[in-house]
Length: 312
Image (tube, rainbow, N blue to C red; front, side):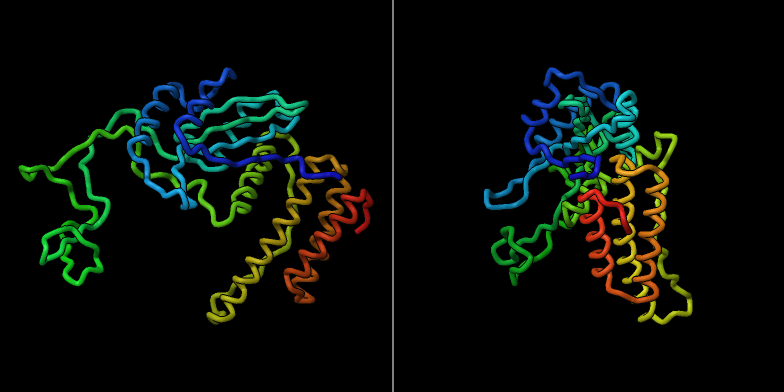
């Protein structure tokens, strides 16, 4: 069975011990930040002070860092440090300044990068910031005690975003070494969507670093005209979303054949042309359901690639 030669595993470290186990491992560590040990201490201290309380039944957990395991493509193993740098910046440009720490491990003939990524900016110099309330506070006008907003006697006492004041009415300040705002980099509705994104960033990085990038032909989307009605525009947008899904499938197939060395460049180009021609005909001329187009592509892939017979 031939599979795509791209491997990415996504995970999280939910405790400080997991973070410390990673950095105190005997393997040689690298980072995009020179003084990463000092910055990591600042970050861990910040997280320790800002942990949320979740019940055991809750599906939510505190996340200290994000952990990625990425297979380094064979042709780039001699440039593995540069590969990690480009890969992280392809995931999100904020990793130019947001810190990540990484190491390399060998498993058989494969070389993997283990990356610990932080999605908050760690300040070069600490900042003095006025403290603000993070939520609204209500009190019961009868009992004068704090209460919920739904209480019929509830009166807004403190508004979210208001400054915290001391007994003399002066603003209270705190020293911040880490950004309060977390960058939404690894957020997702479905883990499959995030995994697909992380894998596509591997492909983008390979294309960026090799002399022979993979250029995939795809099905054209439908043009939305200015004078289209709202109803027509909505239908076209929906269809274009479906076409993008088909194009991702085609791109995945072409990338798999290229990086998995399933076929030579001429064969891959011919197959790409045939994929697009048939998918384009089914979508734009026959107006077939996207599920039918995807089924056709997947059926071809399983029959011809997994069984090793090339015939479109």
